Image (cartoon, rainbow, N blue to C red; front, top):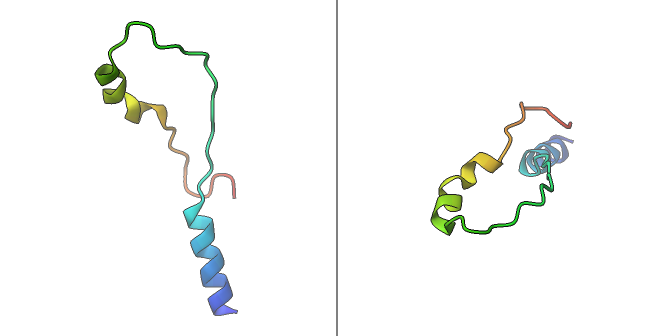
Length: 52
């Protein structure tokens, strides 16, 4: 039982919830470097246990 519970905890920790939002954004004249610099801002941080 301990091994099973440990494995389930590992699997649960490995797969965090994701939220995808389709905005319809189309790159026109924005430089790729500028978009790459802001790339980290596209992720939302949910509190631990969210979606459990």
